[in-house]
Image 1: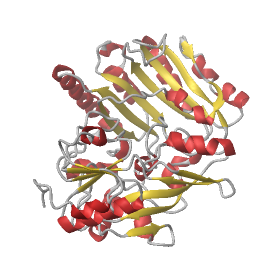
Image 2: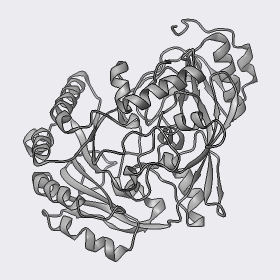
Image 3: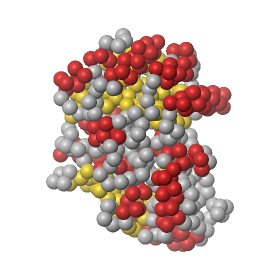
Image 4: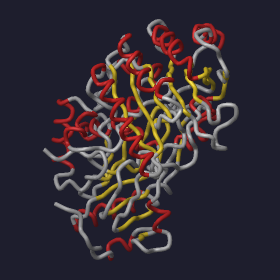
Length: 462
């Protein structure tokens, strides 16, 4: 089944409260554009959903007209262009309700983690956000949700209590461990393959402050810092969360001095325990190489973005990742050959990181889910900025070389949210174990037999 090349009758969509736009309409471009500018969407129709009723109407129309559907909130994960079909933009649905008694948050489809932080912080509570609180909660969580404090508390999907979701048949369903448990399973780590989530309820953490930030060394000292960090990760408590990165930062005003335009090796730290204990634990990192900038300090949890300092403005990004079994001396040497000082200052990957996995992320969720990264000890990820053709070509070549070189040390799998542009079925399947992938395909055949939700990292019905 292919997407229609014409716009079917829109009468049924007249019930939608938000905008219904087609190519050429004045607000169309703004409505389809997300944070990642690498994916330029050109759907036949985009709707700006204002609530669950709009999504129900849109899905019933899509089902009746056999129109494929994609969903976008913030567009941080927009690495695949949506061509033709229907795009549902949930960015207007930002409501967050906090229940301080049960320590839960009810989060609407378009809310960002920054919205959750602002609502939860007055109660001394926090959600399991990733490295940027500008990202949307729903898409992040559907992909498992890899938090800054993952080793301490697990995946964001582990804390979800329930979903409200519209399945492709146009039904609004409530799902939790007791009600439609297979649907609940598929939504926690299976991405958006079985429905459009309108809201979720998740547990919050009683956490107001943490100890975190970055230790930056000149890039030529990447080797001793990486070797020390690798050894250090084998000794620290589960609650110590960290990431090693090689950074080639562009000379743009959004990056603060003195980091702007520099080549750096960094270890980012997030520790939810006692500050004095945290300082003692990270002392070996501060002694591993000359420290140029040290931002590690006690901070409000709501200031989490200061740890990784990710971009806050839209840009065209190319992501890729690989789960690693371990970091042997050979793996470290291979990585440094690819991205270390010898790669030069013009190396096109701006950020190459190794995240310490394990801890709570290695333990099974209390309720079974589709997250398949619990056996990895480290996680390799990279980001480059797509620019003019020569730069874009160099970026693709560097990405291919890096992951080919590191493949012998990997599990063979990726994480769906950071996988990057999905390829064919074999590439898409790498985000899950074969058993989980087959189960997702079966669930797809139950909830979306016509494969309406076919864009992005989508599995095909069994």
